[in-house]
Image (cartoon, rainbow, N blue to C red):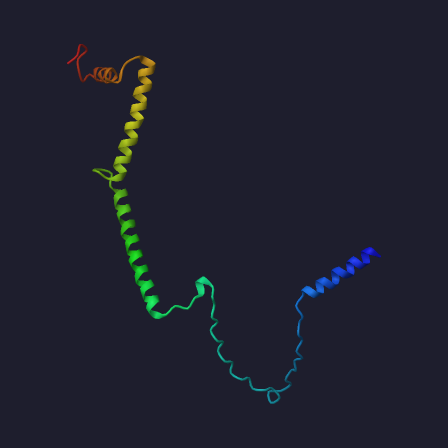
Length: 142
């Protein structure tokens, strides 16, 4: 009995949640003479919305926003063009060249410090040894 009551209560609440459907009787026209001429449909009235993206804007405000947007787009285009030009340059005081020079200097400083730790030669002694091995200077010095 308890399950039957629960099923009935569930069925009644489910019916209460469903929107009622109106059935309008439709009459089919058997001939063109029986058919009623369709009245021209009026265009729907524009809906006034209070949603943030749907607000109606007057022409002056729209022109101001359009001008501001054009200025912003032009600024971004100039910045994008400068960045691409700057990235293409690999010599001089460009940002890309400075980044590469800094990374190379950090790498060789770490290599020099590790070599000093393992061999006991300071960085100037390492440079002197490298010049001597490359025959840029004589075995006894300059």
